[in-house]
Amino acid sequence: MRTDTRAWLTIGAAALACAPGIAFRFAGYHPPAIAGALTFGIAILAAAFLLSWGAETAEMDISQGLALAIIAIIAVLPEYAVDFILAWKAGADPAEAERGLAVANMTGGNRLLIGIGWPLVFFLFFYRTRIRELVVDRERSLELTFLAVATAYVIFIPLRSHITVIDTIVLVSLFLMYMFFTSRVETEEVELVGPAKAIGALQAAPRRLVVVVLLVYSAVAIFASAEPFADSLVHIGERFGISEFFLIQWLAPLASESPEVLVACLLAWRGRAAAGMGVLISSKVNQWTLLIGTLPIAFLVSAGEFGWTLGLPLDSRQRDEIFLTAAQSAFAIAVFANLRMSRAEAAVLFGLFATQLFITNEHARVLYGLAYTILCVVLLAWNWRALPRTLRDAVTIMQGRELAPGDDLAAEEQAEPARPAP
Image 1 (tube, rainbow, N blue to C red):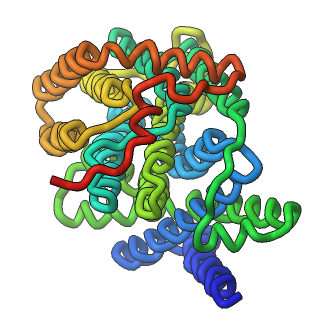
Image 2: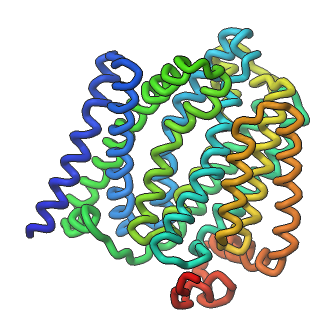
């Protein structure tokens, strides 16, 4: 009983920590930059805890894949809010369109997710277990397959001068198909701990009500706090003379991407690193399909125009940014083609991202994109035996059938005992 009481007090404390961010946003009050960053940052952190507890408990009633997808959708709301505003401004003002801030924010958020989020989850997993490879569930084959299809499509967008309504139809359709197939994965029994365990101990009806309230409340907190948190970071950066493009591409996404990264890290810290990585993979699918696909709509509605070949304009810099982001995505897919990530692969993902973070030279971006592409080809060639297995699992899931146990390398490694650190 004492444990349950402590768990509910923890839930209450997290909910209270979200309240100032929600209240300030709806009251229209903007604290000074540093105070705002702390207030809204704490609200996002607390909402991430609530989101993780609610989503873990939701796995009692829906599939893990669908629960992770719901987490991804809620956690990525800040990125949508910021990018929609930037795309809307670009449609209303040609000068804003020339600055390319919507694409800067979108590409920065996507590269941060893979360049920092994926390695961070791995190294938390390694720190806790000393296991050199993180093996994700075979159900992640579905996300990886859709991510591969979306990446194969997006990587050709830089050959054109606009992101158009046709891109909207293709990418949004991919997202809807992904959500449909994810919802068909059967629910598995989960072992809850901490606050999630206290929620799970409730009867079915009140448990589901609490889960819905937690998910909705955390979504409101994240949506309300992310944009002012990003603005606070931008204002702090401006004091140090940092360029607006750099701030929009990196500092603003650092704020908007923090919810899903925090949720994934919390899951990894509690021994569910595979589920944590699943959150980030699902978030990447979400952003790489629905987010990119809806930007032209926001732009065209604001501009008051419509046409199949019209949309968000791209200059040479923006096309380079999309190519680099797509190439990084392709390499990340190659890393998980065999459903596992090694220490070396996590280090390369982080190292390539960190070294190109402050390089603004156009030729350097293209070279990094080519480096990602070459590494993708090399890694796919190295792991070619795993590709049919991963694709077969994805097809099996889409057909609504259960995955046969022990028919691929990932399943075998999941069953191996933990290996001691060297």
